[in-house]
Amino acid sequence: GAVVSQHPSWVICKSGTSVKIECRSLDFQATTMFWYRQFPKQSLMLMATSNEGSKATYEQGVEKDKFLINHASLTLSTLTVTSAHPEDSSFYICSAQGVGPYEQYFGPGTRLTVT
Amino acid sequence: ILNVEQSPQSLHVQEGDSTNFTCSFPSSNFYALHWYRWETAKSPEALFVMTLNGDEKKKGRISATLNTKEGYSYLYIKGSQPEDSATYLCALLEFQGAQKLVFGQGTRLTINP
Image 1 (cartoon, helix red, strand yellow):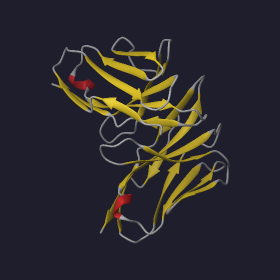
Image 2 (cartoon, chains in turn green, cyan):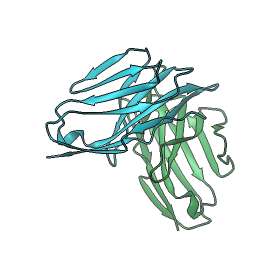
Image 3 (tube, helix red, strand yellow):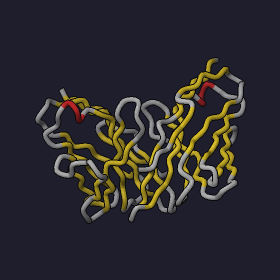
Image 4 (cartoon, one colour):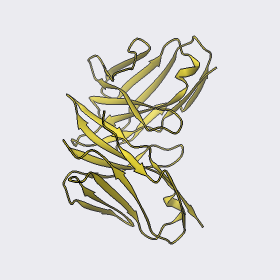
């Protein structure tokens, strides 16, 4: 149980285009999902917390107009990187909060390359 | 800003040997510490959630200890096997209005057959 999927697993896009990444909890409902980013040789950094039916909460330094998050259902959150630039190239990974107070289940991540 | 440090960054161990690595974190306002195992192209897999000072948890050949007063946790692997090769992440749970995990950089473990 507690499986989280992410789609796509990798994507290459041109500078200036937008890319949408989906995060789904497959066998449980998640009112809260999290989006992380990892640059090479660095740790996973929380970008934003996504709550079903309400606006996401962004971490300091993360541009909310650039990284649009939608959590329209209890099993799906999406991250859209708008007007992507090469510096947005990174590994993006989501997690979903489980039933227990400390549970977070992760997806396998999405590698984004902006050319 | 919380700083979670893991050491070493990478480790090569001979199959059958035991090993351990460290996660250090600020000792104030502690809620919980997570350990994850992350294999390439897969989702990070939760190993342990540790909440109490002195906690000791075990899962097969892997165990972990927690010292919240001095701010560290150790992960031990006994009798390493090739399938133990992965990156091991620790993450400190903090509450700033909402739950937030702060990750270390990970320890990349390679088991040599």
